[in-house]
Length: 359
View 1 (cartoon, rainbow, N blue to C red):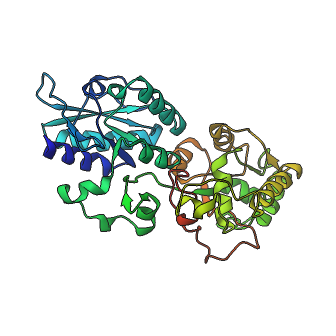
View 2: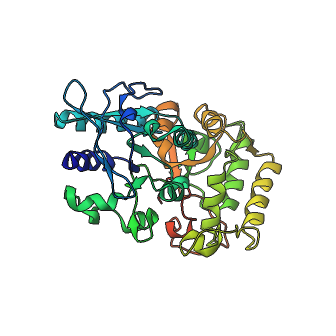
View 3: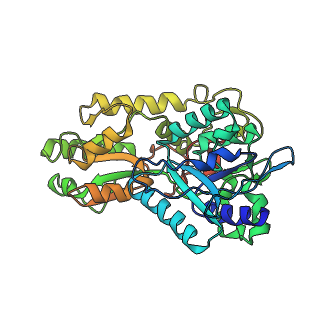
């Protein structure tokens, strides 16, 4: 059973940032419900090892296949990609069946994990995709097996993982999870609106000063209702702190010890970022669609906004849902920010367990 367990974990983890839950009870593999855009599949399970070193084994179902449940947060195009990976694994052998269950957005999964913990371990999934805000939460729970522990038994080559990514998901010297949809915020812009505004559609603004100038040109040309917009979203705030070369929390963003306090109120990053956001809004050339990221995305897809900041993860949805040509650029920087050669800032500048993103 142990061999089967590591094989299925390797197969699924190679396709997602996930943590294998240790000590899950036999009940979690029986659910067949799905939601979102993923498709229904049979459940799947594996033998897992609890933190104490004991083990619990799930029995096979009537079909003779070991059942394992996999919670994830991928919807639309990304959800289809995850389901395709799971289907490929299920079709590759006849010993294990994985049921991929969409559980809502990143925050929803963490909330459901907390509720399942309170209800009892038999309510937990066998594998869970957790955004990296939840990395420390998962490690401290004592419920997870570090993915690194499975490399040797599955023959997985860890050198295929970018060093900067591996370091991001490494805690106490061990890589705890396997990333897939690690991404970064970047600038999306409407090339048609750029053309109408007399801007170069092949040249994205690189600084916030240029964003303001281009937003003004777009709006005054009548190309869009607003030149720019971004959701009032904590991840964007965090990422902009990183572009300034500043820390979010103390103890090297939680790398050398647990974070005991935030640093952005002391290092000046928060004021600089918030002043810039307010300048954009007060200029009249930026729209405010609130905290729900989907609302800002919808406005952009509909051509109401010329530029937005969003995750690289929405690129396929942006292309599929927009009637104009999409342009992309790096996350805009402050003109006095540390120079990194035009590349996004090193992930290690981020606090431990921020968002499931890579640069």
